[in-house]
Amino acid sequence: MQLLNASGCLDALTAPGVARALDAFVTKTVTPQEREGNPPVRIAETDFGMLNTIGLANPGRDRFLAETLPALRSIGVPLWVSVGGFSASDYAQTCAALDGTDGVGAVELNLSCPNVDEAPESAAEIVAACRAATALPLYAKLSPAAWDVAEVARAVEAAGADGLSLVNTIRGLALGDRLRPQLSRAVGGYSGPALKPIALAAVYACRCATQLPIVGMGGVQTGRDVLELVACGATHVALGTILFADPDAPSRVRSELAEAVADAGFENVDDAFCAAHEAVALTDNSL
Amino acid sequence: MRRERRSVVAVEWLGAYALLRVTRGSLDPGIPGQFFMLEAPGRVLPRPMSLCLAPRDELAFLIDPIGPGTRALAALEPGEEIAVFGPLGNGFRLDVPRPLLVGGGIGIAPLPYLSEALERPPAVLGFRTEQHAEAAVLVPNAEVVIDPVLVTEAMPAGRDVLACGPEPMLEAVRALAPAAQLAWEAPMACGYGACYGCVVEIDGKLKRLCIEGPVLCSS
Image (cartoon, rainbow over all chains, first blue to last red):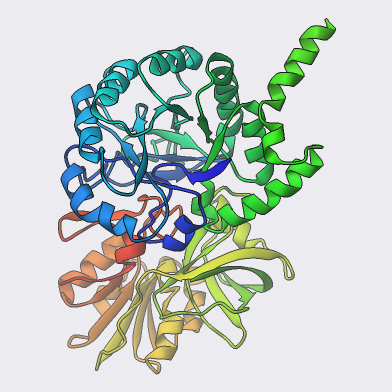
């Protein structure tokens, strides 16, 4: 089990020590053109999570390759590049540019940003175009808002995805005292502790549908949360909103994980892989 | 910058504001104008607070309890622990020959520590009520104005202005003193460049206040 960050939840250049505490660093999403992102106000706290409308702020593909990537490489942590766009060819061109680039271990296709207006083409079309453009491992990052996320998982697997990242944020809205939206664009991506049951359900459903590696993420705060995602079928786990509150979360979560594994009656974390599915099988058999 | 669990020494009320004092541990108090992220008990995100005072073995933060996070901070009891992360961001430049501190409301928060560093220069502080103005005792050599009088009406000319306050005040100060150093505020989730939530327009571009600021030179 590898511990990663959720894309957009850590800048390895401003906090290299935090990035080095992870097994791999996932970049903020790179789009073909530079994007300044959405105007402020961009974030709002809610009772059980937070909303963001950053809007894929990034320097664009060319500057990412020329400036950001070399700087990230010098940090010495394996890199995953999150790739975004507004058409299959947008994604594929960035994948082609990354193909054969030193230091990039995998590409995560951001198929599910809730904060941009442009609707991307279907997840499977984008994955197929990227598959043709690169030999790098391709992880498809999916939205938990799909009616049947397992169906999307099967489709991206058939299109050539090597893994899944589950889940992105889900759209939410928060109002201020005067009943006006707190965020500049009203709606934003909802993350934090409230997302955990949604993430568990998505990982669980997709594990029933595919044997692909899954990076589980959504509301992870503790080692126990990591273990629950693994029990639902995650092979890796990413930290998101918790990194904002606690930059020491990677090492803390790892030490809590060891304890949580023992408390749940397992020898090591790998033994707990898919444990939640076995429990259902037992329940079914007992009927 | 370090993150440590620190225990609360006291919460002292100064009119409408609460001065939260925590043990310093091995945290560096940093430069005046820098800030710390304080864990707000029961909340998802910490709150950014500039350092108000650095008494021996302590760090003190001035809190305006206006929301769930700041109210949780102001309700802390001595002995309770919170995570404190910092110092973060860029503080004020202290190499100014004729400093004048200008603060508005909770924006006076970094001025007591700044005043100490600059050897108690003159200050002009503005508040919306007499009760809020009670916090002015923290800043030596201060002239206090209360709404509807504005700090810009009391600012002497020809000084090197270092200011912190609400955005309209900072804009008005900048109009009078174009070279002023201004400490800005924005909602922040992380304080260390991770979230891209605290962007403000700097030189025509959206930049992260936690990395580029919070103190910016206006010209």
